[in-house]
Length: 275
Ligand code: HPA
Image (cartoon, rainbow, N blue to C red; front, side, top):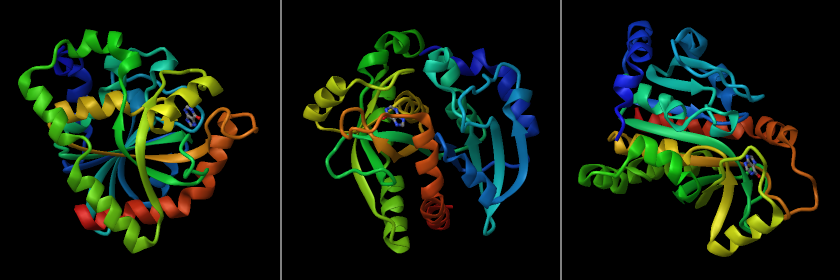
């Protein structure tokens, strides 16, 4: 595997010296989910633009900050602002949040994203735990960063994603807060275009439940680094062809807005249960 620690050493050392504390838990907030950061105490917020070499997120709904937060005396890190391959960044750049989390002492990482619902039981506004994902369409990019996985890396992948611990705690949190949580396979599409109806039909036949443009490679990398990794999708829209309505990023943002209270309850309860 390419040594990203070496490649991004200035960025890492800057982030480490700016960090007000170390903690074992981090969250990566997906499209439209970034506002969760406004519901907790921010002890310090580092604009990612101040870190040398940190890519600038260009997507609406993605602000670039690393927040060091506290809620009910529990401390954690929030990464607000994703780095997507469809923005033209390379795979190694998109892995920076996971790398930084590891370097800042994180052991448990929860990734979130906005996704289109494919399975018949998913509707906009639903939350879905990601049980598995594909990387078939980024194998070429992955080869440049990951190379051939060592035996240890393979073991890490097997044991760390999805983390039973993290997903169990999310299920507990959902039960306590009466939030309906589904579970299914996430199909990663590099984007930037949404899928075609034919592609959605194809992956539906494969057993895919939701589609999106992030998370898979980050989850894999975080798992390889030895962190326990959990991931969930907020279903913001029906995937292409599932409903006659045309897809839009605006719909993604609007659904995320409507789901904010549910999501806030879920993540806060998760924090209570795990930190
Ligand atoms: N497809 C891909 N990515 C997405 C979607 C979708 O339908 N919704 C939100 N992100």
